[in-house]
Image 1 (spheres, rainbow, N blue to C red):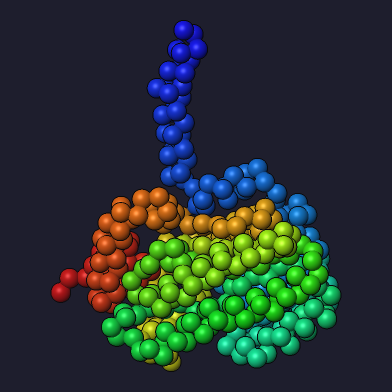
Image 2 (cartoon, rainbow, N blue to C red; image 1 turned 45 degrees about the vertical axis):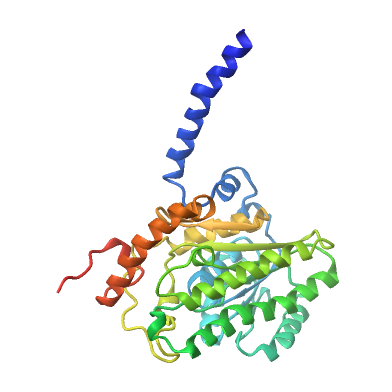
Length: 341
């Protein structure tokens, strides 16, 4: 009888209380439960888990890539910094050496790289390996976003997005993965996807398509590597984060710039996003969801209640498009009122 009472008490009181506590905590989270648990109880990047590793960061001249360079340098990583703008890469390197770490000049290699020039990727990878002897972690961070309606956008924009975001990433991954499998030692490939890699968003049909493609590619690649248990595939899905990516987005035409990047004050700070990324890397987390509320809630709705997610997406998507047509910033359109004529 006492056992029955105990079980009944758990079912009627303890379980609902536990669920309520989880819901209350969820309201203040900026990462999924797995990553949050690792941030609280797992390995810490600054405690030496990443120290001495050779990390190749693409898109390292600004935004997430630049912040990754700074925080990785603080962790004692040796760095390969790549992007198209070599002068900006040198600026990032100087900052790493002067302000962020005890690294020496030879510990940071500036390696100019264009993901569209896939015929150069084998040579670039060889150069990186010759400099450090190995590559422990590749962070696929390069890419461009999009702000345009499908009906107004040329097909060339979609081709350019796929060539850069998807095929460029696959190409450099192929070269580095060949090195990692040959070494048969620990290695990690991290790819920055997006919330729109899991859920579509209006005004970014081509961008979302490339991120969906990356999700499918790396989710399929991961089980192919069962013979290499020490090689880890990790995908990062951030929500809105402060970044220069909005200043370089594709619009209706390939060479047409965005009129106004808009305010970024509502977005997650870059430093916080990168901090959580490094926690996920240090703990070999396969997929990371990083976003402030209510965007983190969107991840969970799409994962567990797609019918409700479609309902919310239709409402928010309509508002996003209306504000875009009215001349408001697409990213901040969820937080502003639509203009009226």
